[in-house]
Length: 153
Length: 340
Image 1: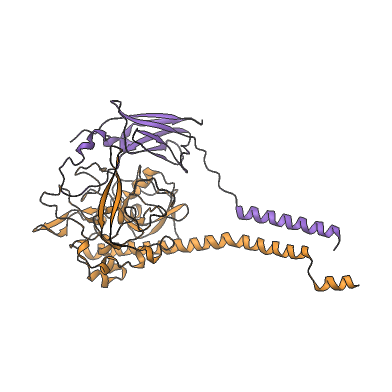
Image 2: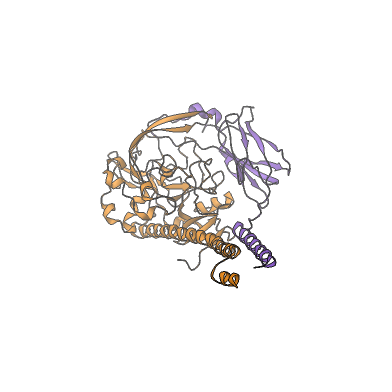
């Protein structure tokens, strides 16, 4: 085998392996870009909302983003991965709390000690929450949300 | 001449490399195809079990006159009259006769407490209630144990509760309890109380006789599915984070009516479809599968469909809600033609 054919064959091998890698790796679908968003939820009296979730829903097309409130009422949004933020544009926002169902003989106000930190239920529905936020295509977005306390029936 | 002879009987290094490269290329082409074929067959298997569960529930409707109640749960405070519910079996026990499990169905008492049944009855897990690919048969039962579970209170503070867990079978499918209407605030209007659910498989109030349940009140019939059977989920795969299979509270005993999320789930704003097994930060209440990109559901008309994991939560809510006046948008749901 002469030098020319060796060179030709190795080129062929290189081309084949390249094609194999390209095929196996595939072409990932490009994802819609998201921008980091942090924020806080406070009661209208100024205290932070220490538990619950926020969900941002784009007014146009796009995936929703969620964040979990910490005890200082702070959240960081995620869409596809941890802390990746939300898509740019205007969003509707809900603030929802999930209390674990409790059982056993307890007083009707079984969550009485927690009443002062419950958010009014209308903030849990997009139809009634009235909260909104605009996310800019920048590396820093800070959103402040104000909610009312639940009034005891 | 000797050189020519030698090259006629032996491979050169380059020839060998070329052959290896070609074989490698072929394997490389084949592997992803084989993987996706395996995943497709797992998905088809999970969806066919879901279809059986859907048919069993509609058969229950035909035989009993209503869809099975997710479980018994009162809508009064626990010490008031009308609260005789405790841990009576969930809807999965009620459909056992319709998934060819008549023998185990006979061993259950529909109005007896879960823990009063024999371990072999509680732990029997028909294959139809688990999704292959997510669990092996050793992950189909939780043993009895005394354990501590973490609880986050609304104040943001963490606490823990000691639970005496009674052994039982665990599964992958959950009835559609509806959306989060009513919320969970410790009130009688909470979504998980009897008759408050907006889905098909909802918690129902018990009929009490001498302090023991003897029937159930809130019956969901086809006429109550105002949006139509083809616009409302009946059941789907429930979200369980990776590593939490057969663990409490994410995947508790599915026949024990006490723990709603072990056999019924909800969907809507703040409870999206989980986008895969790595999602461990959502409240443990929603649907989600381990199949890439989609979650299978059986609808109240008995058809099985896959739903895009990135479905808008308001669209998801309307599919979970049986009387909200909204139906399917074809963008979000892929009909499976020809498979079933």
